[in-house]
Image (cartoon, rainbow, N blue to C red; front, side):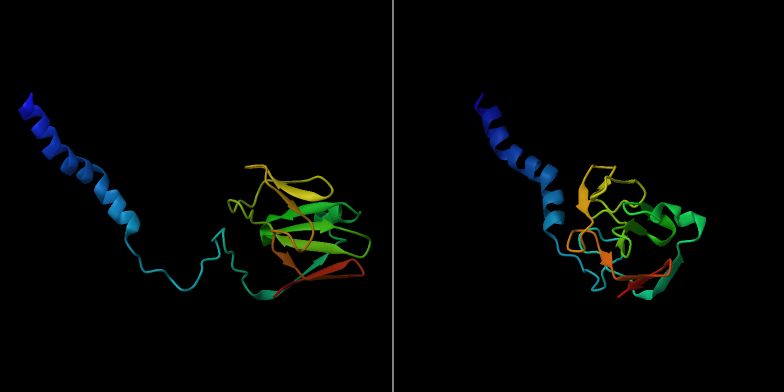
Length: 146
């Protein structure tokens, strides 16, 4: 019995450290991190600068935006569009701040809900979704990506 205890005392520590030590050491290791953030980063999204986008609402693809409360997930341009009033349409990046998903959104008249984890986001430009400046004149929406 003494030999067994002595064996366990001397053998268990190295075995346990061998089994869990490498992952712990790797988790604590440092890695060279790129100074340029990736666009796909969910926690700190980077807005790509690009030319303003001009959308003519008379195009049938945007018929949902002709009335107040209408909205569209414009996946071709990675945008959520919502008609706030007769004179205002807001444009948001359609990347969910939680997981980065872009394709499954619902709108209840006051907030967008990502259908992957049911997180909701306000249509105010001070919320979690990136809001782009827009101008709306004569059925033409211009979105700036500043």
